[in-house]
Image (cartoon, rainbow, N blue to C red; front, side, top):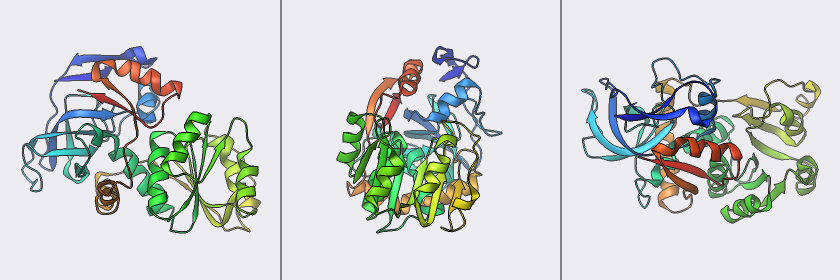
Length: 325
């Protein structure tokens, strides 16, 4: 099969389409012929050499895919050859075939094309496991998502609104903020021209929000704590701005704040299977009802993975970037 190989750590140009061996399928795995995969920030970090795949995972990038079942392991009963599916991966999506633990395979949501379904597994599992399972975001609460126009952000806005939540977002330009508003965001803040701390406090009568989803890390840590309501939860899923920060612990105690960190890729396959089962049960019906839609910025052929990475690193996109085999 063909796959995108990271020839050496470095710029997008190190991504090269090469002939490689087909994956071996274990008893509890499904072999998927990939139709499409989607970019995630983790892919760019892996390319740079700073985010290695978990032990035993495919060495190729790609944390989600859609495609057709080509074979199944001896203990797999749910899926059969020819089924159209999408899947959460620990790697290997940038390839023509990928072997996936059966607990990470999902049906294509009704009304969604096979190609577009590749946009959902990673964002749905990340947002549901972090914001809802760990962060316990509930109807009538308020929620701030930083980077509202990202793949994670565009999904989080829609899912939170579907759950009856008041949604705040930050983004870096008016086009991105308009996209967030169209998806249902209630308060849209340009972090380049506005102080998001002051704006959140103004919009909440000084109370702050109940849950924050943050991908920036260090430079936002204290600011996030300052705008959480009593019993507020800060969910950190990325460190784009840095990993080391100093905080005032005194800001945690009076308001009973919780700081949560989460990464999806290093979780065990058993843990991922629990998340995927919840996503299928709760998130998939929202997608099928049209309450959550795929937000796709661009489709590129797999051979143009380098161009796709350059686009992602420019941060000019809104939503997901897909690679099609």
